[in-house]
Length: 245
Image (tube, rainbow, N blue to C red; front, side):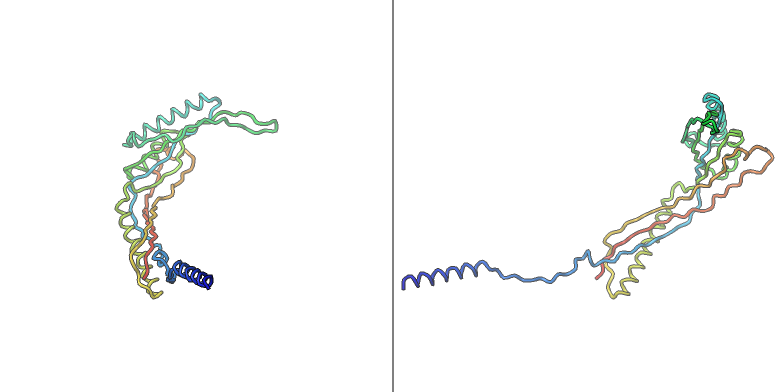
């Protein structure tokens, strides 16, 4: 009888310990986090402005029988080109050498490769801040460099586009907000505050290519080289993530 009491006591103690180790658990239903309740939209805004600066890429290319002859011809022509730029009020700080190279030139015959001579290329990048002088700058540089001058390209730019970017940015945000509001209304939800905003800005013009020729100013009686600056468009794109309720 005593053994039976001890057995019942042990079972009771084990039951109490087991129940004590069990805690009530409340199962919470999984709800979407605020980050999942969002809408992503992209807006864009564009503003047109007039270029106020141009980058002119030009140089000389001379081929002679020897390196020294080619270098001398290129040096003389480039010196004349730079002097003509300065004479047209281009500041020295706005003239920068971009490339100088010397390459052997070969003819390919039935008997193999034959050295023909050497070519020296020397190019400079020039910022023209007075666009009304651009035609004269091109013509005078071509005349100064002679038959070996090379005019590669012109690129028009807006030197300080901060004001245009500000206008385009405001338009882009309004455009994104209008899209988000339309999506929210169509989906039966309420548009909340922006969570993230990402911006991309661009507004460059493609360079205007010129033929590799010095005939631009071979005849002093011919017309000036026509150059049209046109307009540039500054565009801002924004991607905005809004909360939805």
